[in-house]
Length: 147
Image 1: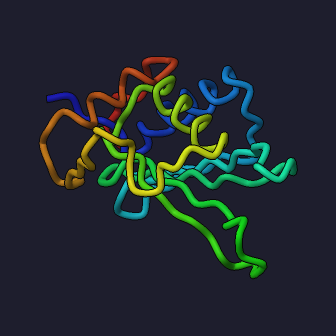
Image 2: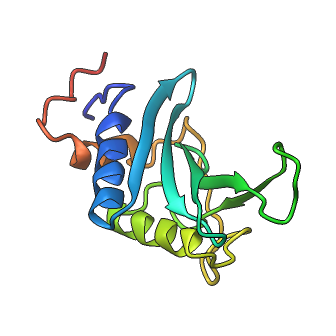
């Protein structure tokens, strides 16, 4: 079994960022974490339905996959947000992920999950090949140290 670094997800997050940019989505920030779970976030700037640039906060975990949060347009309170989970796999192909983000940014209602795609979760402790799957996104092929 190949030991995989706890930071192997950085390459995946970078591939998702690049896919978003190839779809014309501007990125404000990207972050990765490893506090027990591999996590990441991307802050995308999208054109909202009111014609203003808005922040779409995209969050990822190795157990739940991608979700999003954005300010609710019908509420004046600054702290009112809508949230959603993308559904499908926890490690979707970056182009598939970017396409869903564009649909959400355009106002498509995906608040619960993508229609027809059940939510699939996993446990970080699962020996299901997930960690090795992250290696496909390691641009240098160097993330095999197991540190």
